[in-house]
Length: 497
Image 1 (tube, one colour):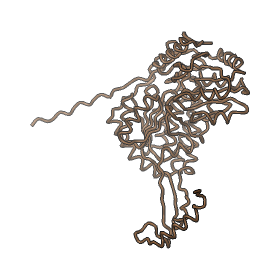
Image 2: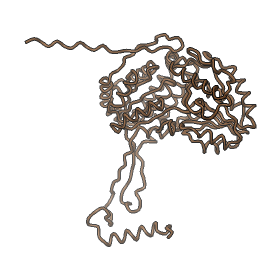
Image 3: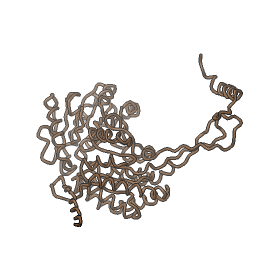
Image 4: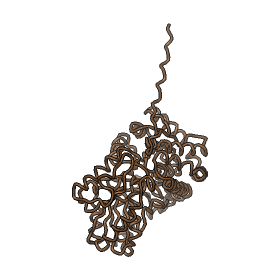
């Protein structure tokens, strides 16, 4: 009988991570198959029992150690971010610092938010005690973006870990090195089990993670991809958090601090090459201060240089989107005060300020995700609010007004609003982060973020037998009459007939 020869091992497919500023290869990573992703989820399932058993205090202690490790090695991580995104060192450090703040907050507050709490049992069941607590889901799959490869996925990873879940993390194919750095440093402080694992690859790897039996998916990326993930997750009733794109407005009232508003507009539109989901893309300015505001924006924009204040476009395909939006705006009668038709180069896009752009143009309606902004004059704040809300997106917004900021903010159709400063909500770990409409749903950060990665467990316990038995076939007509009388006395007086 001839022995069966073993099948040769299939070579692991790999891909290169490139520095977008130079096209230098900065790392090579495996393209994980669906089978490998499934194996990672199985390992995470086993690890989840141990991680959950540590309790809030045990997990908090490990998360504090991870915080300390990232803090001490911040420069090292920043260099990895720089190599894979091309962003300046200061911008890389900023997102790392914000992520550190979120790890610390989640570790410190998980017990307070998710621990067992008493609830009122009500008069009819006053012989009971009632409690609710939040328990871990199990395994969470996190699919991260490339524009903020530390800050954004850590908003899911950190809160899910603090809630007691294990993680399988699929970073963007443009920033796998950042993902590996985060996973490796976590393993240094939690070596016992694979609590946080890395899978790398392209869309197929992400799709495999969605279908691998995880208990929740946290996705950050485009609206189109988010819809595909939702459709796939629906096959297994896997819940999802979707943090998709935005077309975020900045509103400038007549009484605004124009210097601060202009500075916020320029930073919000051009920082990180405009590759910011909560970035400023549309600006609506009261007609009384429009001309002055535009002059201030132009003076500041003149000082912003590609390759200095911000880096290259990380994803080459986005260059075509930016070029198309600028061209459409100009073809529709818009004017470029700076940048314009020649703004888009091979790697960098010059800061572009567009005015007189029709509201139905691509530059106003679609997410550009590049260093551009449109500025429009409005007769009053009613018009500003109406135009700001005329979008299918609803992620973030910014308002500058000395007197009317809260009133305007309350009427903006967005998940987050910052008043008299750019992006403040993103740095506050206690505030939920997320949008509505085509910007997605679900929340990360804050108490809402911790609960997003937990399941509520309600427990009712009978402390003693009550004389009135409502849930029994032994219930008598006398009991029913007594209950009817009691309920009428308690609640019937407010009824109007």
